[in-house]
Image (cartoon, rainbow over all chains, first blue to last red; front, side, top):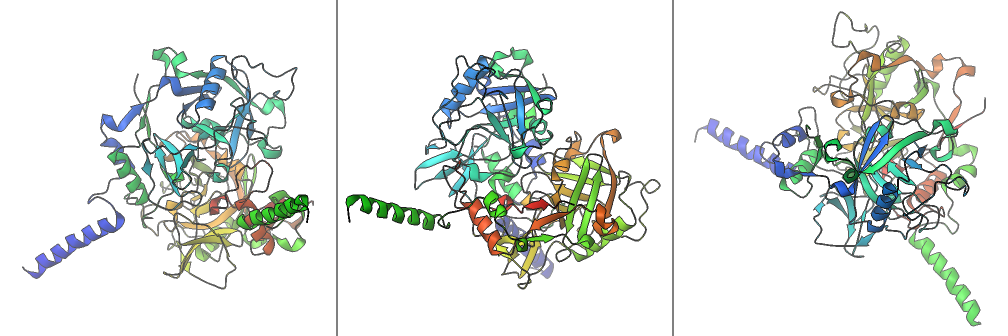
Length: 305
Length: 305
């Protein structure tokens, strides 16, 4: 073996060592490359029976519902949508680095409030549920400040606690929940919110989450912030009208928005997590070798009609 | 002792036990109460020599500079501000759940680029610095996904690593840094960004942070998102003009914006952290007993002129 070959061998060993240290494959791919090389089986379509189209003047926000974690709230929101409860109501509140909230501005005025027909105004809380080890779960490999374990179930960020045998949806950017007053059973689904800032994880298990914005999030996050307490708009004309909320299944097939979501229970997704823990893009000088659930992307793609 | 008194005693013991378990004082106060009961010594004014007024058409954004962590970048940005480099330039990019970025749209076109007079275009990186144990530091008590230790220095979120003897500013909501190309020394302060989403902590130690938005953040976070790659505005007319950036010390005293920042090196601030770890407000059903650096508020108050 010549000295030069030795150097080459050491070089290969060194590269392997780095790759082991970074937990990366020999030629780590960035997210763009992982998506470009993905197979059709790495993607899933949305269930039109569990997909909401929230129509604002500025465009469409698509929300995926999560009946496995909040079955009663999902069923009730679907009832409210089918009776067109939300059509013509408004975004009432936009608090910077926190939430936007929409519902009936007259909810507290019996003579003016939008009547509720088939839906319910109040429901028991669904803050968490029994841990089901059979549900697909892709765990995060690194520490979390708030929960013993975090990870993804079908695109939704969740936490699990084996000791208490519970699991729950968690508050990350774009998660959608049912606002409530002080009583835990004062929510239900007539007043909804979406997270628009840093993950307010102290809300976890304090309020029922039931869905996630998968497209159009920027239409909510860029709304003007309200100047009254908690980001409420202080003048009625500042509120943002909700044209309608529909279930995708209520919309004729050709008019549905054709998107696919990256599956989170595949080896490809685990490679994606790894490539976000150790960013291979040339720009990065330091690879964190860490990731926190709030920084895990779940890619979405449009399908041409 | 009658049974009734026994119950009462047990009740008190139980309350004490809960308070010990939650690490709270017997009558835990919420943030509003802590602020209301604060003393003048719990607040500090901004150093007008290290405060920027970024003027947009929509209002004023106030940025506090942090020379202790990025002395060269702070000095250079101040030079650029004094030569009015930024006046009339634009916000070029707004990427949802990530950053807004401002600078010269013609920076890459020598014949059109805004000339740089006394400032520098490029600087060596100031991604981290030697750990200085004498700098005031209020540690976070809970786990962090990315760093061995996080906490606050004078209102700024920082991480420390005793093993490598380094410390660095970290990417949380409202932090301001100097954009760069792939080369680590390609930044300097002519192209600036602010974090508008969930803390992108994978950027830590990859780019020089040098300041923090302390007021007016909502003017940046609610800007329309750009539709081109990385949130760049695809049409020049979509860019948001920067009227000016001034150091507070350049502005006559009566015209300065009179605000105070909550000090982060006091027992009062440590009580505030505790009250955010275990929210005493009646709304909360479950107190997290945890907090992550991105969820720690640093209150700001306006002083009447």
